[in-house]
Every structure is written in C-alpha cells, then in structure tokens.
Length: 221
Image (cartoon, rainbow, N blue to C red):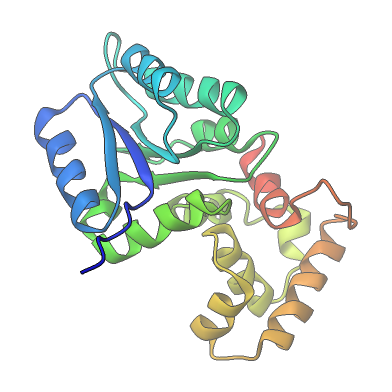
C-alpha cells in the first residue's frame, strides 16, 4: 500500500491555546502538515527562520501588547521569506491592516475574519488559494470598502454587474469561480473585468496584479 504524501506545510501562530490547538487539528484533518504552532510574533519569526513552511496562519493581535504583533511578523515574513504564503486572521475588520498586508506584492497573501474558520470548506479553500500564490480577502472587508466608497468616482462609474464581479475578485475568486457564482460565461466575466480595469485606469503591465490593485483603490485613504 502506498503511503500518502505529506500535505502542504503550515505554521500556526495564535496566542489562544484552545484556538491554536483547534486550528492545528482542523488543518491536519484537511490534509495539511502542521510543522509549527506558536503563541506570539517573535516565536513565529523564529519558527519560520528555523523551518520555513509553505504557508503561515497568524492572528493579527498577539502578545505582548495584543495590538498588531501578528501583522508585523507577517510583513517581516513576506519581506524575508517571499516564498512563504501568509494568511492573517483578525477578530474585526480593520482595513488598515489589509492595506499594509496587500501593499507591494499581492501574491500568496490573505486576510480573513476569524469567524470564517467555522466554514471549514471555505477556510481551507482560501488557504490553498493563498498557498498557490493567490489572494484571499474577507467578504466583510470588501463589503465595508464598498460602503465607505459608495460616492467615490471610479465606483460610481461601475455597472451593477461590474460591482458584483469586483466584489468576487476582491475575495480572490478566479474567473471561473466568478462565472459559476454569477451563472454567466467566463467570456462575460472577462469582459466585465476589462471594463473595471479601464474605468480604474489600470493598464496591463507584467508586474502588476490588477485584480488586487482594483480593490486597493478602496483600501487607500
């Protein structure tokens, strides 16, 4: 009988022992190989330096100040170990944190509310997406972006369908995923995305990730 191959390697950073153990068990049952479980930002950096995983799951607020230690550690990881994907979990929507995390290279990064962990299938899908180099942005963050930006000129120029497409783009959905959600063809999705890029004045460039740049327009003050 052939032994199962080990799953993607993940390090978990969460100061709540119960939540940390729960995350580790959930990830192991989903096929991940948990190679580290720590309780603060400094421990996370040491763990990644000693044995870089494929992906890190980190709480934003951890000791000693419970402010943004997890986010700071995530930013250091993205700078020092760019091949390590990062998925940050937050108790509340804080657009500033999403902005900092998504600044620069948008590949392999995610920002989700902790409540999303309860939807195991969606959480695991987001983690796989981030690990594969994609982006995962919490739907609630997207919702608040649109609520705050309702009067912004670029958004005002979007059609209702383009707004729906942009919302799903911001969550990290692929063109195929957007097409399935809206029950339209991929060709129609591509047409709407091109329209969004045009209205946001985001020309094609080999180093730009225009899907995320479109969302960042609403994360910036």
